[in-house]
Image (cartoon, rainbow, N blue to C red; front, side, top):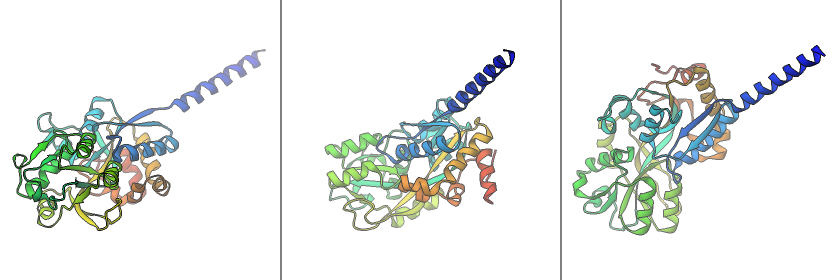
Length: 318
């Protein structure tokens, strides 16, 4: 009888431990608007983390980079996708983080893919950035990464916010305003192809305006987190030629408080499964150890650094 009782207790413990393992840690990943690449790609990364890292991971729609950094700082999110430039602002306490100051509660897991600065319009009179003068243009939500990207582009073209009818709209609002003819153009910063931009190309006859030449050169010389980028022809329906622009890098960050082993497993779950992720989303093709570890303006989490060290790459930690 005693042996039977012990066996029952042992079985109960196994069941309890099994349930605990299934429940595991639950991580929330801040992404972006549902029409953007952050949300769709973030959801796929979350699936691979959940399947391979032994932790639950759910991607949630947010207002993007700044909101994700603030969410991690507040403890609402444990992971977040952010623009590399906004990450630099947060870490250094500049631009959109100038008033609130430096945020040091996050660490880098790795760079993911290029985020093209896409200037989209349906106005045939707009062929260059200079043609935005006097037009109603969405330059992103106040203090957003898109806002600062737009200001950089406008400044390089010799324009200010006062030279346009500036509209401070979120990603989704910009798309709707373009559809309704309330604005002439919008800056949208996201991995191309961007679903919402693709829809505009098909249904509204929109097209991309290049950001190149002297304008791009001025931006890249003053801001090291920008690089030149080409959106290949046929990325969008009706886009018959390459479009040259500039890009920042989509980056995955994590709360600094997350334990090293968990972050190691998250990093491994992503970068050991690049081929499979690419099947699920085209942006997976840009995942690589080199892309993950280059051009970062904040320190890496020790767990991610351990994974990259196994691949022969040393990254800064703090």
